Length: 400
Image (cartoon, rainbow, N blue to C red; front, side):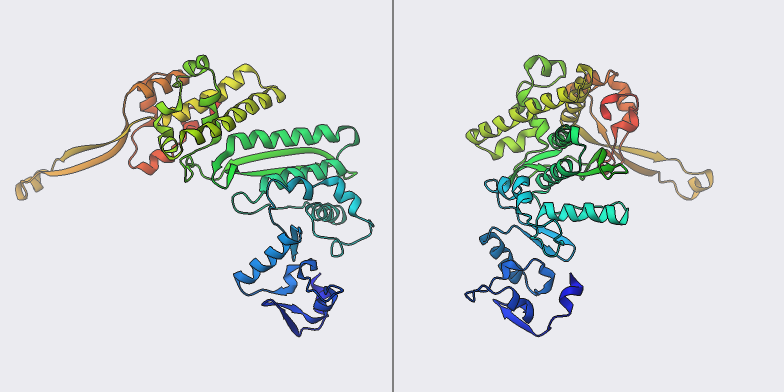
Protein backbone atom coordinates (compact mmCIF):
# COMPACT_ATOMS: atom_id res chain seq x y z
CA UNK A 1 0.00 0.00 0.00
CA UNK A 2 2.90 2.36 0.73
CA UNK A 3 4.38 1.82 -2.76
CA UNK A 4 1.05 2.61 -4.34
CA UNK A 5 0.58 5.95 -2.58
CA UNK A 6 4.22 7.10 -2.58
CA UNK A 7 3.98 7.85 -6.30
CA UNK A 8 1.38 10.56 -5.69
CA UNK A 9 2.01 14.28 -5.31
CA UNK A 10 3.58 15.05 -1.94
CA UNK A 11 2.26 18.63 -1.59
CA UNK A 12 -0.06 18.34 1.42
CA UNK A 13 -3.45 19.91 1.90
CA UNK A 14 -4.78 20.38 5.40
CA UNK A 15 -8.15 19.07 6.56
CA UNK A 16 -9.08 20.18 10.08
CA UNK A 17 -5.43 20.22 11.12
CA UNK A 18 -4.67 16.85 9.49
CA UNK A 19 -2.26 16.79 6.57
CA UNK A 20 -3.18 14.57 3.63
CA UNK A 21 -1.75 14.08 0.15
CA UNK A 22 -3.32 16.29 -2.57
CA UNK A 23 -4.22 13.44 -4.95
CA UNK A 24 -5.65 11.38 -2.10
CA UNK A 25 -7.72 14.38 -1.08
CA UNK A 26 -9.27 14.58 -4.57
CA UNK A 27 -9.91 10.85 -4.57
CA UNK A 28 -11.79 10.93 -1.26
CA UNK A 29 -13.87 14.11 -1.78
CA UNK A 30 -17.63 13.68 -1.67
CA UNK A 31 -19.55 14.59 -4.87
CA UNK A 32 -20.92 17.65 -3.11
CA UNK A 33 -17.46 18.70 -1.97
CA UNK A 34 -17.82 17.45 1.60
CA UNK A 35 -14.48 16.31 3.01
CA UNK A 36 -14.67 12.57 3.56
CA UNK A 37 -11.55 11.63 5.43
CA UNK A 38 -13.46 8.66 6.85
CA UNK A 39 -13.33 7.03 3.40
CA UNK A 40 -9.55 6.75 3.59
CA UNK A 41 -8.68 3.17 4.54
CA UNK A 42 -5.06 3.57 5.64
CA UNK A 43 -4.26 6.11 8.36
CA UNK A 44 -0.54 5.78 7.69
CA UNK A 45 -1.12 8.02 4.66
CA UNK A 46 -2.06 10.89 6.98
CA UNK A 47 0.59 13.04 8.62
CA UNK A 48 -0.81 13.11 12.15
CA UNK A 49 1.22 15.11 14.63
CA UNK A 50 -0.86 15.51 17.78
CA UNK A 51 -3.20 13.52 19.98
CA UNK A 52 -6.01 15.95 19.16
CA UNK A 53 -5.70 15.16 15.45
CA UNK A 54 -5.86 11.43 16.15
CA UNK A 55 -8.99 11.94 18.25
CA UNK A 56 -10.60 13.84 15.36
CA UNK A 57 -10.06 10.87 13.06
CA UNK A 58 -11.46 8.45 15.65
CA UNK A 59 -14.46 10.72 16.19
CA UNK A 60 -15.18 10.71 12.43
CA UNK A 61 -14.93 6.92 12.41
CA UNK A 62 -17.55 6.60 15.15
CA UNK A 63 -19.92 9.11 13.56
CA UNK A 64 -19.78 7.28 10.24
CA UNK A 65 -20.09 3.86 11.99
CA UNK A 66 -16.80 2.90 10.41
CA UNK A 67 -15.15 1.04 13.28
CA UNK A 68 -12.06 -0.25 11.45
CA UNK A 69 -9.04 1.45 9.89
CA UNK A 70 -5.68 0.24 8.69
CA UNK A 71 -2.47 1.86 9.81
CA UNK A 72 0.06 0.20 7.52
CA UNK A 73 -0.01 -3.50 8.58
CA UNK A 74 -2.04 -2.78 11.73
CA UNK A 75 -5.83 -3.02 11.92
CA UNK A 76 -7.33 -0.46 14.32
CA UNK A 77 -10.70 -1.28 15.87
CA UNK A 78 -12.90 1.06 17.91
CA UNK A 79 -15.21 -0.71 20.34
CA UNK A 80 -18.69 0.68 19.47
CA UNK A 81 -20.27 -0.57 22.70
CA UNK A 82 -22.50 -3.56 23.53
CA UNK A 83 -25.45 -2.34 21.46
CA UNK A 84 -23.58 -2.43 18.13
CA UNK A 85 -21.02 -5.23 18.35
CA UNK A 86 -23.20 -7.96 16.91
CA UNK A 87 -24.06 -5.81 13.94
CA UNK A 88 -20.57 -4.75 12.88
CA UNK A 89 -19.11 -8.24 13.42
CA UNK A 90 -21.83 -10.09 11.56
CA UNK A 91 -20.17 -12.77 9.43
CA UNK A 92 -23.13 -13.20 7.05
CA UNK A 93 -23.32 -9.46 6.33
CA UNK A 94 -19.59 -9.33 5.70
CA UNK A 95 -19.74 -12.28 3.26
CA UNK A 96 -22.56 -10.78 1.19
CA UNK A 97 -20.93 -7.32 1.14
CA UNK A 98 -18.00 -8.59 -0.95
CA UNK A 99 -19.06 -8.05 -4.55
CA UNK A 100 -15.87 -9.53 -5.96
CA UNK A 101 -13.51 -12.15 -4.54
CA UNK A 102 -10.68 -10.75 -6.67
CA UNK A 103 -10.43 -7.51 -4.67
CA UNK A 104 -7.10 -6.94 -2.91
CA UNK A 105 -6.94 -6.00 0.76
CA UNK A 106 -6.13 -2.40 -0.29
CA UNK A 107 -9.45 -2.16 -2.17
CA UNK A 108 -11.61 -3.82 0.47
CA UNK A 109 -13.16 -1.89 3.30
CA UNK A 110 -11.15 -2.41 6.53
CA UNK A 111 -12.73 -5.11 8.68
CA UNK A 112 -11.67 -7.79 11.15
CA UNK A 113 -12.75 -10.60 8.82
CA UNK A 114 -11.07 -9.01 5.80
CA UNK A 115 -7.84 -8.72 7.75
CA UNK A 116 -8.00 -12.36 8.92
CA UNK A 117 -8.70 -13.49 5.37
CA UNK A 118 -5.54 -11.67 4.29
CA UNK A 119 -3.58 -13.41 7.09
CA UNK A 120 -4.85 -16.80 5.94
CA UNK A 121 -4.05 -16.09 2.28
CA UNK A 122 -0.55 -14.96 3.24
CA UNK A 123 -0.02 -18.18 5.19
CA UNK A 124 -1.06 -20.29 2.20
CA UNK A 125 0.90 -18.24 -0.33
CA UNK A 126 4.16 -18.08 1.65
CA UNK A 127 3.71 -21.45 3.41
CA UNK A 128 4.72 -19.83 6.72
CA UNK A 129 3.15 -19.58 10.16
CA UNK A 130 1.38 -16.28 10.82
CA UNK A 131 0.98 -14.46 14.14
CA UNK A 132 -1.76 -11.96 15.00
CA UNK A 133 -1.58 -9.93 18.24
CA UNK A 134 -4.75 -8.47 19.73
CA UNK A 135 -3.61 -5.52 21.83
CA UNK A 136 -5.51 -2.77 23.61
CA UNK A 137 -6.50 -1.28 26.97
CA UNK A 138 -9.11 -2.67 29.38
CA UNK A 139 -12.55 -2.97 27.78
CA UNK A 140 -11.33 -2.46 24.21
CA UNK A 141 -12.80 -5.80 23.08
CA UNK A 142 -9.74 -8.07 22.75
CA UNK A 143 -11.48 -11.23 23.98
CA UNK A 144 -14.60 -10.42 21.97
CA UNK A 145 -12.55 -9.97 18.78
CA UNK A 146 -10.66 -13.20 19.49
CA UNK A 147 -13.95 -15.14 19.65
CA UNK A 148 -15.18 -13.62 16.39
CA UNK A 149 -11.82 -14.31 14.77
CA UNK A 150 -12.26 -17.98 15.66
CA UNK A 151 -15.83 -17.87 14.32
CA UNK A 152 -14.45 -16.58 11.02
CA UNK A 153 -11.73 -19.23 10.69
CA UNK A 154 -13.91 -22.18 11.71
CA UNK A 155 -16.83 -21.09 9.48
CA UNK A 156 -14.74 -20.63 6.33
CA UNK A 157 -11.67 -22.83 6.81
CA UNK A 158 -12.97 -25.48 9.23
CA UNK A 159 -13.77 -29.10 8.27
CA UNK A 160 -17.20 -29.24 6.60
CA UNK A 161 -18.72 -31.82 8.92
CA UNK A 162 -17.41 -30.31 12.17
CA UNK A 163 -17.41 -26.53 11.68
CA UNK A 164 -19.97 -25.83 14.41
CA UNK A 165 -18.49 -28.36 16.81
CA UNK A 166 -14.98 -26.99 16.32
CA UNK A 167 -16.06 -23.44 17.04
CA UNK A 168 -18.01 -24.59 20.10
CA UNK A 169 -14.94 -26.31 21.53
CA UNK A 170 -12.74 -23.26 20.94
CA UNK A 171 -15.36 -20.82 22.21
CA UNK A 172 -16.04 -22.78 25.41
CA UNK A 173 -12.29 -23.17 26.02
CA UNK A 174 -11.95 -19.38 25.91
CA UNK A 175 -14.99 -19.05 28.19
CA UNK A 176 -13.50 -21.40 30.79
CA UNK A 177 -10.22 -19.49 30.80
CA UNK A 178 -12.14 -16.23 30.97
CA UNK A 179 -14.10 -17.42 34.03
CA UNK A 180 -10.90 -18.09 35.98
CA UNK A 181 -9.04 -15.02 34.70
CA UNK A 182 -11.66 -12.27 34.65
CA UNK A 183 -12.14 -9.46 37.13
CA UNK A 184 -14.84 -6.83 37.56
CA UNK A 185 -13.76 -3.28 36.70
CA UNK A 186 -15.72 -0.07 36.47
CA UNK A 187 -15.48 0.10 32.68
CA UNK A 188 -15.65 -3.66 32.03
CA UNK A 189 -17.72 -6.07 34.11
CA UNK A 190 -15.65 -9.05 32.86
CA UNK A 191 -12.11 -7.84 32.23
CA UNK A 192 -9.66 -10.62 31.32
CA UNK A 193 -6.49 -10.44 33.43
CA UNK A 194 -4.56 -13.14 31.61
CA UNK A 195 -2.75 -13.51 28.32
CA UNK A 196 -4.19 -16.09 25.91
CA UNK A 197 -2.21 -17.86 23.19
CA UNK A 198 -4.44 -19.71 20.72
CA UNK A 199 -2.87 -21.77 17.94
CA UNK A 200 -4.69 -23.18 14.90
CA UNK A 201 -3.20 -26.10 13.00
CA UNK A 202 -3.90 -26.62 9.27
CA UNK A 203 -3.57 -29.79 7.21
CA UNK A 204 -2.09 -30.09 3.70
CA UNK A 205 -5.38 -28.87 2.23
CA UNK A 206 -5.18 -25.72 4.39
CA UNK A 207 -8.18 -26.80 6.45
CA UNK A 208 -8.12 -26.51 10.26
CA UNK A 209 -7.09 -29.85 11.73
CA UNK A 210 -6.44 -28.99 15.40
CA UNK A 211 -6.14 -26.19 17.92
CA UNK A 212 -4.25 -25.53 21.13
CA UNK A 213 -4.92 -22.89 23.77
CA UNK A 214 -2.77 -21.66 26.64
CA UNK A 215 -3.30 -18.93 29.20
CA UNK A 216 -1.09 -17.27 31.77
CA UNK A 217 -1.91 -14.79 34.50
CA UNK A 218 -0.03 -11.60 33.67
CA UNK A 219 0.31 -10.59 37.32
CA UNK A 220 1.35 -13.45 39.62
CA UNK A 221 0.05 -11.62 42.68
CA UNK A 222 -3.73 -11.55 43.10
CA UNK A 223 -5.02 -8.41 41.42
CA UNK A 224 -7.37 -6.08 43.24
CA UNK A 225 -9.16 -3.44 41.22
CA UNK A 226 -9.89 0.12 42.24
CA UNK A 227 -13.16 -1.12 43.72
CA UNK A 228 -11.64 -3.93 45.78
CA UNK A 229 -12.80 -6.86 43.66
CA UNK A 230 -10.41 -9.64 42.74
CA UNK A 231 -10.90 -12.57 40.32
CA UNK A 232 -14.64 -13.06 39.78
CA UNK A 233 -14.37 -16.82 40.32
CA UNK A 234 -13.57 -16.29 44.03
CA UNK A 235 -16.65 -14.11 44.54
CA UNK A 236 -18.73 -16.56 42.49
CA UNK A 237 -17.46 -19.49 44.56
CA UNK A 238 -18.51 -17.96 47.88
CA UNK A 239 -21.81 -16.74 46.47
CA UNK A 240 -22.80 -19.79 44.40
CA UNK A 241 -21.57 -22.84 46.34
CA UNK A 242 -24.05 -24.45 48.71
CA UNK A 243 -23.43 -24.45 52.47
CA UNK A 244 -22.53 -28.15 52.51
CA UNK A 245 -19.75 -27.69 49.94
CA UNK A 246 -18.38 -24.59 51.68
CA UNK A 247 -18.35 -26.41 55.00
CA UNK A 248 -16.49 -29.32 53.43
CA UNK A 249 -13.87 -26.96 51.97
CA UNK A 250 -13.55 -24.95 55.20
CA UNK A 251 -15.09 -21.72 53.94
CA UNK A 252 -17.58 -19.38 55.67
CA UNK A 253 -21.17 -19.08 54.55
CA UNK A 254 -20.83 -15.46 53.43
CA UNK A 255 -17.98 -13.36 52.02
CA UNK A 256 -18.53 -10.71 54.71
CA UNK A 257 -16.71 -13.03 57.13
CA UNK A 258 -13.54 -12.89 54.99
CA UNK A 259 -11.01 -10.06 55.24
CA UNK A 260 -10.16 -11.08 51.66
CA UNK A 261 -13.29 -9.20 50.53
CA UNK A 262 -13.44 -6.46 53.17
CA UNK A 263 -12.31 -3.63 50.88
CA UNK A 264 -14.78 -4.65 48.16
CA UNK A 265 -17.69 -4.82 50.59
CA UNK A 266 -16.90 -1.37 51.95
CA UNK A 267 -16.82 0.25 48.49
CA UNK A 268 -20.28 -0.77 47.30
CA UNK A 269 -23.77 -0.20 48.58
CA UNK A 270 -25.90 -3.20 49.45
CA UNK A 271 -28.12 -2.49 46.44
CA UNK A 272 -25.18 -2.54 44.01
CA UNK A 273 -23.74 -5.68 45.65
CA UNK A 274 -27.01 -7.43 44.85
CA UNK A 275 -26.43 -6.59 41.19
CA UNK A 276 -22.93 -8.05 41.37
CA UNK A 277 -24.26 -11.10 43.20
CA UNK A 278 -26.46 -11.88 40.20
CA UNK A 279 -23.39 -11.77 37.94
CA UNK A 280 -21.44 -13.96 40.39
CA UNK A 281 -24.20 -16.59 40.41
CA UNK A 282 -24.20 -16.57 36.62
CA UNK A 283 -20.42 -17.11 36.63
CA UNK A 284 -20.76 -20.01 39.09
CA UNK A 285 -23.44 -21.73 36.99
CA UNK A 286 -21.37 -21.23 33.84
CA UNK A 287 -18.37 -22.86 35.54
CA UNK A 288 -20.37 -25.99 36.35
CA UNK A 289 -21.91 -26.04 32.88
CA UNK A 290 -18.49 -25.88 31.21
CA UNK A 291 -17.01 -28.51 33.54
CA UNK A 292 -19.76 -30.87 32.38
CA UNK A 293 -19.16 -29.97 28.72
CA UNK A 294 -15.46 -30.87 29.06
CA UNK A 295 -16.42 -33.99 31.04
CA UNK A 296 -14.56 -33.15 34.24
CA UNK A 297 -15.06 -35.81 36.88
CA UNK A 298 -16.45 -34.90 40.32
CA UNK A 299 -13.01 -35.44 41.84
CA UNK A 300 -11.41 -33.10 39.29
CA UNK A 301 -13.97 -30.38 39.99
CA UNK A 302 -13.44 -30.86 43.73
CA UNK A 303 -9.67 -30.50 43.26
CA UNK A 304 -10.21 -27.21 41.43
CA UNK A 305 -12.47 -25.95 44.21
CA UNK A 306 -9.95 -27.07 46.84
CA UNK A 307 -7.33 -24.96 45.11
CA UNK A 308 -9.66 -21.92 45.14
CA UNK A 309 -10.44 -22.55 48.82
CA UNK A 310 -6.74 -22.71 49.69
CA UNK A 311 -6.03 -19.44 47.84
CA UNK A 312 -8.89 -17.70 49.68
CA UNK A 313 -7.73 -18.98 53.05
CA UNK A 314 -4.09 -18.14 52.34
CA UNK A 315 -5.20 -14.51 52.20
CA UNK A 316 -6.67 -14.94 55.69
CA UNK A 317 -3.39 -16.14 57.21
CA UNK A 318 -1.57 -13.98 59.72
CA UNK A 319 2.05 -13.36 58.69
CA UNK A 320 3.95 -11.68 61.51
CA UNK A 321 7.38 -10.17 61.74
CA UNK A 322 9.74 -11.96 64.12
CA UNK A 323 12.94 -10.48 65.56
CA UNK A 324 15.64 -12.55 67.25
CA UNK A 325 18.72 -11.09 68.87
CA UNK A 326 21.71 -13.37 68.53
CA UNK A 327 24.91 -12.98 70.52
CA UNK A 328 28.10 -13.47 68.50
CA UNK A 329 30.96 -15.00 70.46
CA UNK A 330 34.37 -13.37 69.98
CA UNK A 331 37.63 -15.23 69.44
CA UNK A 332 39.97 -15.53 72.44
CA UNK A 333 42.34 -12.89 71.02
CA UNK A 334 39.49 -10.48 70.37
CA UNK A 335 38.05 -11.03 73.85
CA UNK A 336 41.21 -9.58 75.46
CA UNK A 337 41.09 -6.43 73.34
CA UNK A 338 37.33 -6.02 73.20
CA UNK A 339 35.15 -7.21 76.03
CA UNK A 340 31.87 -5.90 74.60
CA UNK A 341 29.60 -8.60 73.19
CA UNK A 342 28.56 -8.37 69.54
CA UNK A 343 24.85 -8.78 68.89
CA UNK A 344 23.07 -9.49 65.61
CA UNK A 345 19.36 -8.88 65.07
CA UNK A 346 17.76 -11.42 62.74
CA UNK A 347 14.39 -10.55 61.19
CA UNK A 348 12.05 -12.80 59.25
CA UNK A 349 8.34 -13.28 58.50
CA UNK A 350 6.54 -16.31 59.78
CA UNK A 351 3.04 -17.75 59.33
CA UNK A 352 1.22 -17.91 62.63
CA UNK A 353 -0.49 -21.06 63.78
CA UNK A 354 -4.22 -20.36 63.85
CA UNK A 355 -7.61 -21.69 62.70
CA UNK A 356 -7.07 -20.56 59.10
CA UNK A 357 -3.84 -22.54 58.87
CA UNK A 358 -5.69 -25.63 60.09
CA UNK A 359 -8.32 -25.15 57.36
CA UNK A 360 -5.64 -24.98 54.66
CA UNK A 361 -3.86 -28.04 55.99
CA UNK A 362 -7.16 -29.92 56.10
CA UNK A 363 -7.62 -29.36 52.35
CA UNK A 364 -3.99 -30.27 51.69
CA UNK A 365 -4.19 -33.37 53.84
CA UNK A 366 -1.10 -32.57 55.93
CA UNK A 367 -0.35 -31.44 59.50
CA UNK A 368 0.14 -27.77 60.35
CA UNK A 369 3.67 -28.43 61.60
CA UNK A 370 4.61 -29.99 58.25
CA UNK A 371 3.08 -27.08 56.36
CA UNK A 372 5.04 -24.47 58.34
CA UNK A 373 8.27 -26.45 58.00
CA UNK A 374 7.81 -26.77 54.24
CA UNK A 375 7.20 -23.06 53.83
CA UNK A 376 10.15 -22.18 56.01
CA UNK A 377 10.87 -18.65 57.13
CA UNK A 378 10.66 -15.73 54.71
CA UNK A 379 13.49 -13.19 54.95
CA UNK A 380 11.24 -10.48 53.55
CA UNK A 381 7.70 -9.97 52.26
CA UNK A 382 8.73 -10.37 48.62
CA UNK A 383 9.86 -13.93 49.41
CA UNK A 384 6.40 -14.65 50.80
CA UNK A 385 4.65 -13.11 47.79
CA UNK A 386 6.79 -15.00 45.24
CA UNK A 387 6.42 -18.33 47.02
CA UNK A 388 4.92 -21.04 44.81
CA UNK A 389 2.97 -23.83 46.50
CA UNK A 390 3.48 -26.12 43.51
CA UNK A 391 7.21 -26.24 44.29
CA UNK A 392 6.54 -27.48 47.81
CA UNK A 393 3.61 -29.76 47.02
CA UNK A 394 4.43 -31.37 43.65
CA UNK A 395 2.13 -34.33 44.31
CA UNK A 396 -0.95 -32.28 45.06
CA UNK A 397 -2.96 -32.16 41.78
CA UNK A 398 -5.00 -29.01 42.40
CA UNK A 399 -1.95 -26.77 41.99
CA UNK A 400 -1.84 -27.62 38.30
